[in-house]
Amino acid sequence: MPSDTVTSLWYVPYTSGAWGTAARIGSIPSAPYPALAGFPTQNALYCLHPDAGDASMRWTVYNGDVWSGDHGDDETPHHLYGSAVAAFGDRLYCVHSRPDDTGPLYCTSTAEGRRWTPDRQIASGTSGAVALTAGAEHLYAFHAPGSGLQEQHFDGTRWSDPTTVADGFSGFTPAAATYRGVPHCVVLAQDPNGDQSLLWTSLVGGRWATPTRIPGTTYDALPALGVSNDDRLVCVYCAYDGDNQLWWTEYDGAKWWDQPRKMNLTAHNSSATLAGYDGILYLVYNPLTG
Figure (cartoon, helix red, strand yellow):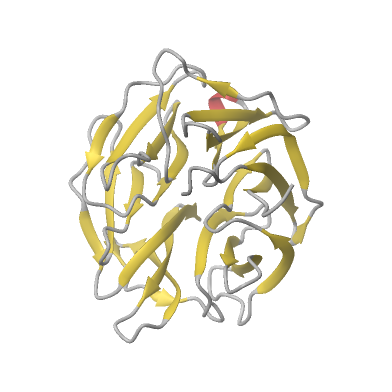
């Protein structure tokens, strides 16, 4: 993430198969890589993002009508590169890498949405990109340490050691969501032949299924994953093949669309993030301009 990249935050609601109008989140300056999650105990949608100046963790909160101002934790500062956020139990968790590190992942959490715990290292040797989703009994974190895709989970007390979900390809940015009670993960991957596409896997019978390709995703694509109010698993990704357009595709529990659809929105690479709140799925992204 270039330190001189400064952009803004925009959001788009999605209900019953249709995207709404994109709108700016106040006048908050941001570096790329926001992370979005609903926080039920606070009845709010939280968007975390790196500060445009020093990459310190900032957040803004949506109550269904308006976004709050920009907040930070001066008592326990955190600095973000890649990050993901999810509610688990009665806390909101953020797993992230740091701009000045080459691989470790750290975890911090909050109970009331204002004061965060000190960073705790949970993994090393990763690419810096991470995805997070809460299942019924565990919080699942995915990261791609250069070759393959790894997962580790948290039971509310301790993190497991990383395990390999799949290898044999070069993994980049993962995305995760829990759909119909089952954790799912989508990852941009490059196979041994050099072909790139989005692959997806899910936890079946306690084991991760063999990753398979999402149809039509042949771009350099960095994904976001969320669940809509009409019971669809929605994947949004940025195809940075020259125009940085956002695309989307849906999974209905049986199959993905044969061809993804263009959203007519442009975004910074890896800036899209999805989360549900109060029956609506929201997309937050960093536009190329504005």
